Length: 326
Ligand SMILES: [Fe+2]
Ligand SMILES: [Fe+2]
Image (cartoon, rainbow, N blue to C red; front, side, top):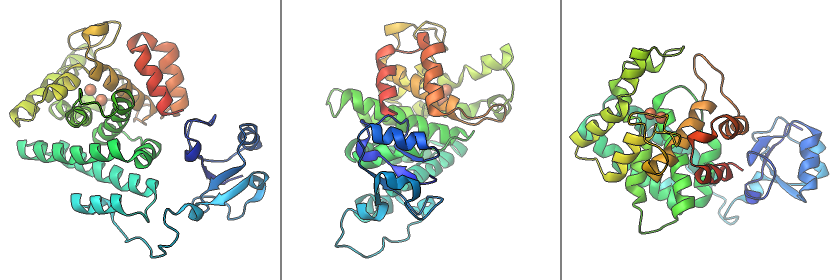
């Protein structure tokens, strides 16, 4: 026990909520065996132990055995994900010596930094530059399945709007990709921008309201409820408001039972893009740590959403969202 195992090769076909986790009980080992796993990938760099130990009941493969090109022994360059410019990010993504998870970490940290800069100074110029950066991340999510799946596993959950924006952007886009594939009927680049920028209007809301560690008063709620309008206004001012961005930014707090805001739309009145974003938005809010609450585990958050909030969500989309984390 104490080994960090990676079951991503069995991504859709194993009984654990996450594909990468630290083994902490004999029951987990028994469960892997019951599901016919003969080998598991172990990342000894991240594990508490350096030897197979109890996990030897399953054969194991060390992470290094999974290097894509065994002939290439040269170490990957020491990229600093915080300072990557887009061309360097492209080089990281194209480097076969870097694992899917390594690429995902570079993309994730790069995206969080980019959103942080954008939300700190949402000028027209920064919004346009932000959109083109999001287009590059969207390209990666649409074309590189391994790195895209790894992105879902490595997301961090803190209380910053920029981290939330990236998490919702990534998971909404993964759901859109699962639903629409590469269909020409949908502009997934503009849609990705809508997902990443869904909360742009929060820059116009008093931070004390956004970070208030208690229930908002009616007046504070009224001021919070304007962020969809404010987001659209900012995008329009930057000449960056596509139809995909408009519906997502405007409707991501609308709920299927008509109890959302700002327009109390219900059911099919809400655009499918906004219904996708709404599910990802609530999931990230539940799994994030806030000053007034602890983070929920993904499995608990999905269970709560199914059992207590089911009427808020499009049932079919929610099922597809759960499968992303299965
Ligand atoms: Fe929002
Ligand atoms: Fe949000």
